[in-house]
Image (cartoon, rainbow, N blue to C red; front, side, top):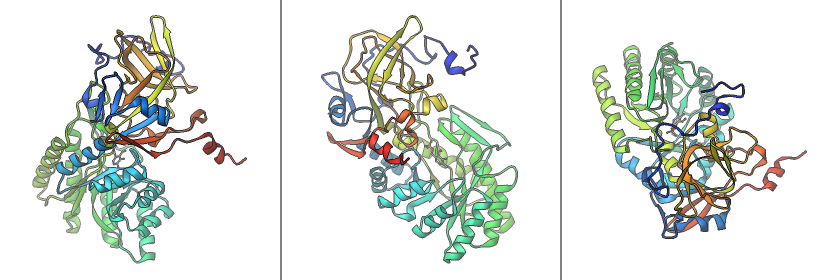
Length: 461
Ligand SMILES: Cc1ncc(COP(=O)(O)O)c(C=O)c1O
C-alpha cells in the first residue's frame, strides 16, 4: 500500500479488488446468506422483499431507505430461542432499536440489553417488561441508574468501582436490592476470524481480570451486601466466527468464579458470555448457526465448570448484529457514475457515511446489487460511494455491478440492520433515512425520515 499523508484510504488504489472477491458468473444472482430470507429477484428483474418490489418501496418511501424484513428478524429471534431454550437471549439494542423492534423481540421471547437512558426509554415506552431488561454501559450517570432502579430493570452490568458506589447509594436510598453482574475484561480481543488472548486489558470497558480489579469488585459487592451479585459477564468483541475466543474467555471468567467461591463461599448462579456472533457481509463470511453456537458454548462452559468443580451457571448471551444485521438492506438511488479510466468506477448513491459509517470507521466490507432491474451487461468492479464531503465516504469498497449501471437505478446493500441506523448522523445536514418493516407484501413505516424541518427545529439560534 502506498503511503499518503491523508491516510491509507486515499492511496489504496487497487482496481482488482481484494483477493476474496471473485468475478460473479451471474451479476444478477443473490447469495442467500447475504440477504433477508424473503428477498427474491422478481420476473421483472427487480428485487422484492416479502413479495413487495423495491421499485414500489422507492416510490412510496423515497431513498435512501432501510428495509426490514420482519419475518426474517422474527425467524432469527426464534432460531436463537430454539437453540438456547433454557438460557436467556438478550438482544443487544445498540445494534438497532426502535419501538417496533422492541415489540418484535419481546413477542419472540427475547430479553433486551440497553446501554443508555435513551435506549432504556425506548424499551420502556414500547412496553418491554422491565425485568427482561439488562442495563450496560461504562459511564452510566446517577440519573440513568436511578431511572433503571425506578423502572425495575432485571439486571445492571456494573462496569466500575464508581458505578458500584453510585448504585449502592441509590439502592440504599430506595431500599431495594438490585441484581448485578460484574463486567470482566478477560484479555481476549476477537474480531472476525481472529482473536488475541493477552494478559493486557487496555480498554475502557469492565474490570481487569489480570490486574485483580474484577475479583475486588465482586468481593466489594458481596461484602457490602447491598447489591445482589448474580454473576460475571464477559464480551470479547464483534463479528466473531471463531469459537476459540469464547473458550479462552469462559476459562478465565470461570476461574474467577472459582476464586470467588474459594474466598467467599459463594457460587454465583449466572454467567453472561456477551455477543459478537458474526454475520455474512460478503462471500468470504460463513457464519455459524445459532444451534452450532449453542452447542459450542455449552460444551465450553460445561467442561470449564467440570475442571473448576463448579455447578454450571444459568447462561445468557447478547447477540445484536446476528439478530438484526441480516434482516435489513439499504435501498439507494444512483446519482452519478464516474469511470476513472483504468482505476475504478465510482457509483455515487444518495446516502453514504451518514447512514452507514461502518465502512469509513472500521474499514468494514459490504456487498451490493443492482436492485431495480436485472442486467445483461458484463460485471464491472465498482466502488459504491455516498454524497458526503469526504473522500473516505465509501459504502461498499469493492463490488461487481453490471457495467451499464446508470443514474436512476436502485442499488441495494444487504446486512445493514446493525450499527447503521443506530450510528447514523446528520453530517452535511443530510436527514437520516426512514426504516420500513415489510411483512406479507405490506410495508409500514417504523421510523420516519428526518426532514430539514427536524434539523432546523434543533437550530434555535
Ligand atoms: C456488552 C455487549 N454485548 C453485546 C454486544 C453486541 O454485539 P453484536 O451486535 O456484535 O452481537 C455488544 C456490542 O458492542 C456489547 O458491547
